[in-house]
Length: 116
Ligand code: AMP
Image (cartoon, rainbow, N blue to C red; front, side, top):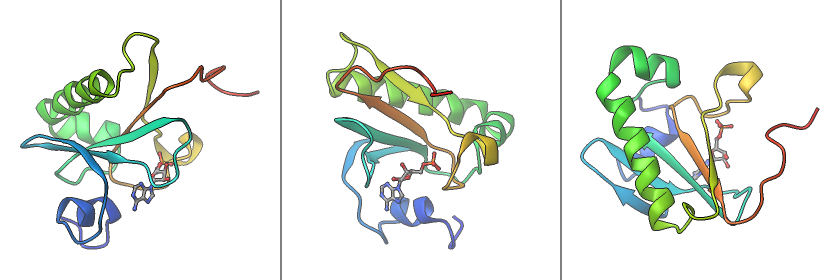
């Protein structure tokens, strides 16, 4: 655990979150500032800064995050109409919290992937 990391502190129960799914290695909770009707963040419980660091250090945990994201999409009723799964990474990716997280977004048509 990184004591300075917001999401590590959520895993530790030091900061509240609305948890929607949990496994031995992952936690999923609602985004505090949702950008769509459904906006859930899926994280590995272990601290890795971004998706590259996660996939390099622990491919099984990366697979666990993907499986948990699919379970969340299913549980939130998103798989019929579709949804978006995003890993913002680094400065150009707009990453703000440096504990890797997948955004599960859906519940309405989300429009183009990025605006020009
Ligand atoms: P990113 O820009 O990909 O790093 O996304 C960080 C996300 O974390 C943003 O969508 C924030 O709204 C969300 N966020 C920040 N603080 C919290 C929190 N305490 N609980 C839930 N989501 C949070």
